[in-house]
Image (tube, rainbow over all chains, first blue to last red; front, side, top):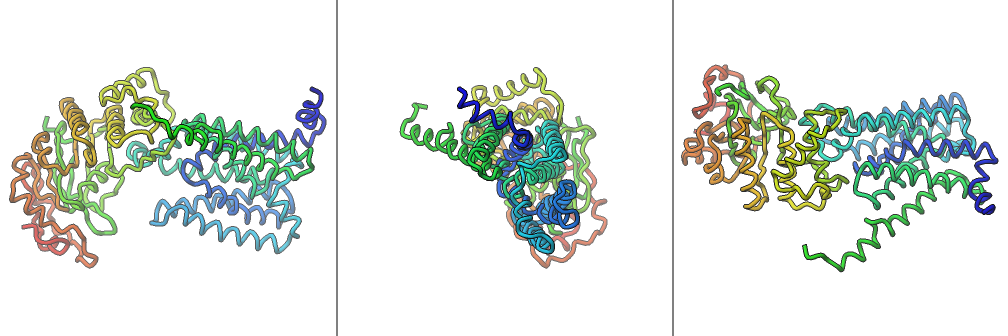
Length: 291
Length: 274
């Protein structure tokens, strides 16, 4: 019993930095995982990845002028992310080009600008900070920011839920009964950017997408209800954060990748054992009902 | 009874400055049941999109009776059948006009959804996932959604495509029920026998209206022949259609065929209609 305690609970009780890391990553999962579910359902799973690259130049600009300071980097990332998200979204809505292509174009330009900006000032060590995050060094500012983003995200999901579902399920129908179709798409893109910017402080731009997409992708194998999928993805996110932090603590591994790899393990287990996963669908396949 | 539900005034709809519906004028009577027929590309779907407001007119106007609620079932649904939703979720979307984004679904709303599912014969399918439905079952579910929408004007774009005879019969019964409830219904259809049997009025399109009114008169062989001569493709270098006051020449109901007084300009975008 004592062994279990010292393995799973003690690190969080004894070390303030572990408490902060846990609080930050759990709040992040609370907002980012449901967003990931909708990204996946809209077949925009890779857009999150693209968008995370897109926020880099903004964060880099903040870094260039103020060093490793959370607020300027966050605001910079937010601005760059929104420009790319809204720009790519607008081009796909108002021209013949589809969103995947416009998103790719925007994020590549943005990424190049970001790398250029970082190279002007920073060393590669600093760049590693930006890219892989500093979850073990979350200060009060960062925690407040992540908490605020989670609150905004959950509130927005609650308010726009029906429109988000309708826009995914049958966009033409939504357009025929309401004017929410366009706005809700941009609200959603805004939420994606917000959560990625929140994540980049804790996990870095590259890995924050992982916490957004992997729990969502894993949850898909367990349920066929959108609402339950969101709840499940958050639960998987929570479990991954906790497991990842413990893993990083005990094995002295970097915390960001440890969290994402934990989510990756859940993903593979889901593929295998979920009710919609391979084992179940394979074993059921050679039996059939009469009707 | 003779109040118009829809009034078209010299309506031109299209894409990239090429008209798909050309100078349409006339009215759709409240409570009427109209079939819209014509070849592929003759502007039937475009007309419905214009009525719904998804497509802005290039010129002219569509006036709807004030407060009229529209239910629209598109031909090419953008419905994502892989989305994790049940039949109940899909049909409940029909509550949107009443409840909007945040309004609570009341017990009465849930009853109306259940009644709609019952009416289309899907009462045991509430929890069925969308990707587990056959084409006919999905179409029944979409009709149930239209039922729930409780609309005054119902627009159905080729609802009988790839649907078996039994289902078509059931859906026709629903359409007749709507007609009996004095709702205005417009249905794009290709099966002329079906149109003759069930639809009192018909609009025959070939970019411009070839004939519009009583079904038997509209579907006369000479009208059908004229519609068949319609040239589907638009021409890249068709001359510009100049306004010449044609809106005055036919502001008188729709009970007669609308032969437009501008064959000279139309002739370039398609073969002569006369």
